[in-house]
Amino acid sequence: MEVVINTVISEFSDFNDLSEFVIVVIRLLLAAVLGGLLGLEREQRGKAAGIRTHMLVCMGSAVFIFIPQQTGISDAEMSRVIQGVIAGIGFLCAGTIITRKDEKGTSGLTTAAGVWLTAAIGIAVGLGREQTAVLCTLLAWVVLYVVPFFSDSISKKKASRSGHDEDSADV
Image (tube, rainbow, N blue to C red; front, side, top):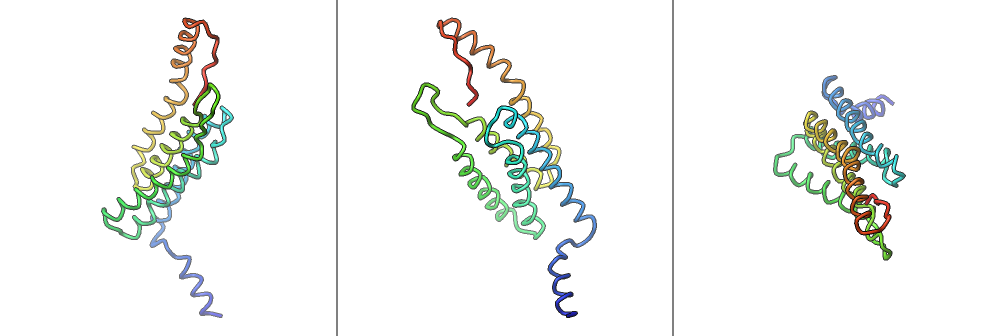
Protein backbone atom coordinates (compact mmCIF):
# COMPACT_ATOMS: atom_id res chain seq x y z
CA MET A 1 0.00 0.00 0.00
CA GLU A 2 2.88 2.33 0.77
CA VAL A 3 4.22 1.85 -2.77
CA VAL A 4 0.86 2.91 -4.22
CA ILE A 5 0.69 6.02 -2.02
CA ASN A 6 4.27 7.02 -2.89
CA THR A 7 3.56 6.48 -6.58
CA VAL A 8 0.44 8.66 -6.43
CA ILE A 9 2.34 11.38 -4.56
CA SER A 10 5.18 11.34 -7.07
CA GLU A 11 2.73 11.54 -9.97
CA PHE A 12 1.21 14.73 -8.54
CA SER A 13 4.48 16.45 -7.70
CA ASP A 14 5.28 18.27 -10.90
CA PHE A 15 5.89 21.57 -9.07
CA ASN A 16 9.41 21.93 -7.76
CA ASP A 17 8.44 24.52 -5.15
CA LEU A 18 5.69 26.89 -4.07
CA SER A 19 6.86 29.70 -6.35
CA GLU A 20 6.43 27.50 -9.42
CA PHE A 21 2.89 26.66 -8.31
CA VAL A 22 2.09 30.36 -7.79
CA ILE A 23 3.40 31.19 -11.28
CA VAL A 24 1.13 28.57 -12.86
CA VAL A 25 -1.89 29.82 -10.89
CA ILE A 26 -1.20 33.45 -11.83
CA ARG A 27 -0.74 32.64 -15.51
CA LEU A 28 -3.86 30.51 -15.74
CA LEU A 29 -6.00 33.05 -13.88
CA LEU A 30 -4.64 35.92 -15.99
CA ALA A 31 -5.30 33.98 -19.18
CA ALA A 32 -8.86 33.25 -18.03
CA VAL A 33 -9.53 36.90 -17.17
CA LEU A 34 -8.01 38.32 -20.37
CA GLY A 35 -9.78 35.77 -22.56
CA GLY A 36 -13.03 36.45 -20.72
CA LEU A 37 -12.74 40.19 -21.33
CA LEU A 38 -12.51 39.61 -25.06
CA GLY A 39 -15.25 36.99 -25.04
CA LEU A 40 -17.58 39.34 -23.17
CA GLU A 41 -18.07 41.52 -26.24
CA ARG A 42 -18.86 38.51 -28.44
CA GLU A 43 -21.26 37.22 -25.79
CA GLN A 44 -23.06 40.57 -25.65
CA ARG A 45 -23.53 40.46 -29.43
CA GLY A 46 -25.01 36.97 -29.20
CA LYS A 47 -22.14 35.21 -31.00
CA ALA A 48 -21.50 31.51 -30.48
CA ALA A 49 -17.89 31.99 -29.37
CA GLY A 50 -18.43 33.96 -26.18
CA ILE A 51 -16.88 34.28 -22.76
CA ARG A 52 -16.29 30.59 -22.06
CA THR A 53 -14.81 29.87 -25.48
CA HIS A 54 -12.40 32.80 -25.26
CA MET A 55 -11.41 31.88 -21.70
CA LEU A 56 -10.71 28.27 -22.68
CA VAL A 57 -8.75 29.27 -25.80
CA CYS A 58 -6.60 31.70 -23.82
CA MET A 59 -5.95 29.27 -20.96
CA GLY A 60 -5.32 26.39 -23.36
CA SER A 61 -2.81 28.40 -25.34
CA ALA A 62 -1.03 29.39 -22.14
CA VAL A 63 -0.86 25.77 -20.96
CA PHE A 64 0.45 24.58 -24.33
CA ILE A 65 3.26 27.11 -23.97
CA PHE A 66 4.26 27.07 -20.32
CA ILE A 67 4.29 23.30 -19.83
CA PRO A 68 6.98 22.75 -22.50
CA GLN A 69 8.74 25.87 -21.19
CA GLN A 70 8.83 24.34 -17.70
CA THR A 71 10.42 21.19 -19.10
CA GLY A 72 13.24 23.29 -20.54
CA ILE A 73 12.75 22.81 -24.27
CA SER A 74 14.94 24.73 -26.70
CA ASP A 75 13.87 27.89 -28.52
CA ALA A 76 13.60 25.95 -31.79
CA GLU A 77 11.28 23.42 -30.17
CA MET A 78 9.23 26.22 -28.57
CA SER A 79 8.86 27.77 -32.01
CA ARG A 80 7.30 24.53 -33.24
CA VAL A 81 4.94 24.42 -30.27
CA ILE A 82 3.80 27.99 -30.99
CA GLN A 83 3.29 27.11 -34.67
CA GLY A 84 1.18 24.13 -33.63
CA VAL A 85 -1.01 26.25 -31.37
CA ILE A 86 -1.51 28.82 -34.13
CA ALA A 87 -2.39 26.16 -36.70
CA GLY A 88 -4.78 24.42 -34.32
CA ILE A 89 -6.57 27.64 -33.48
CA GLY A 90 -6.82 28.34 -37.21
CA PHE A 91 -9.01 25.26 -37.58
CA LEU A 92 -11.21 26.39 -34.70
CA CYS A 93 -11.53 29.85 -36.23
CA ALA A 94 -12.40 28.44 -39.65
CA GLY A 95 -15.40 26.78 -38.03
CA THR A 96 -16.75 30.16 -36.92
CA ILE A 97 -16.76 31.61 -40.43
CA ILE A 98 -19.91 31.05 -42.47
CA THR A 99 -20.27 31.94 -46.12
CA ARG A 100 -23.81 32.89 -47.06
CA LYS A 101 -25.42 33.05 -50.46
CA ASP A 102 -27.58 36.04 -49.53
CA GLU A 103 -26.58 39.70 -49.61
CA LYS A 104 -24.85 39.51 -46.23
CA GLY A 105 -21.88 37.61 -47.66
CA THR A 106 -19.61 36.21 -44.96
CA SER A 107 -20.14 36.27 -41.22
CA GLY A 108 -18.03 35.26 -38.26
CA LEU A 109 -14.83 36.97 -39.35
CA THR A 110 -14.61 39.23 -36.30
CA THR A 111 -15.31 36.30 -33.99
CA ALA A 112 -12.65 34.20 -35.73
CA ALA A 113 -10.13 37.03 -35.52
CA GLY A 114 -10.99 37.49 -31.84
CA VAL A 115 -10.44 33.81 -31.07
CA TRP A 116 -7.15 33.91 -32.98
CA LEU A 117 -6.00 36.99 -31.05
CA THR A 118 -7.14 35.40 -27.79
CA ALA A 119 -4.83 32.47 -28.53
CA ALA A 120 -1.97 34.89 -29.15
CA ILE A 121 -2.67 36.54 -25.80
CA GLY A 122 -2.63 33.10 -24.17
CA ILE A 123 0.73 32.41 -25.80
CA ALA A 124 2.08 35.69 -24.39
CA VAL A 125 0.81 34.77 -20.91
CA GLY A 126 2.29 31.29 -21.22
CA LEU A 127 5.67 32.78 -22.10
CA GLY A 128 5.51 35.01 -19.03
CA ARG A 129 4.91 38.18 -21.06
CA GLU A 130 2.02 39.33 -18.89
CA GLN A 131 2.40 43.07 -19.59
CA THR A 132 2.33 42.44 -23.33
CA ALA A 133 -0.75 40.25 -22.92
CA VAL A 134 -2.58 42.91 -20.87
CA LEU A 135 -1.66 45.67 -23.36
CA CYS A 136 -2.82 43.54 -26.29
CA THR A 137 -6.09 42.79 -24.51
CA LEU A 138 -6.70 46.49 -23.89
CA LEU A 139 -6.02 47.32 -27.54
CA ALA A 140 -8.30 44.50 -28.68
CA TRP A 141 -10.98 45.77 -26.32
CA VAL A 142 -10.73 49.19 -27.98
CA VAL A 143 -11.11 47.55 -31.39
CA LEU A 144 -14.15 45.54 -30.28
CA TYR A 145 -15.93 48.23 -28.24
CA VAL A 146 -14.82 51.63 -29.56
CA VAL A 147 -14.18 51.13 -33.27
CA PRO A 148 -17.77 49.97 -33.98
CA PHE A 149 -19.05 53.44 -33.02
CA PHE A 150 -16.97 54.93 -35.83
CA SER A 151 -17.60 52.18 -38.37
CA ASP A 152 -21.37 52.19 -37.69
CA SER A 153 -21.42 55.94 -38.25
CA ILE A 154 -19.55 55.57 -41.54
CA SER A 155 -21.85 52.75 -42.67
CA LYS A 156 -24.95 54.82 -41.92
CA LYS A 157 -23.59 57.80 -43.87
CA LYS A 158 -22.71 55.53 -46.78
CA ALA A 159 -26.20 53.95 -46.74
CA SER A 160 -27.93 57.32 -46.67
CA ARG A 161 -25.87 58.53 -49.67
CA SER A 162 -26.77 55.46 -51.70
CA GLY A 163 -30.45 55.67 -50.72
CA HIS A 164 -30.51 52.41 -48.80
CA ASP A 165 -31.38 51.99 -45.16
CA GLU A 166 -29.09 49.10 -44.35
CA ASP A 167 -28.18 47.97 -40.90
CA SER A 168 -24.48 47.62 -40.40
CA ALA A 169 -23.76 43.96 -39.83
CA ASP A 170 -21.02 42.73 -37.56
CA VAL A 171 -18.94 40.21 -39.41
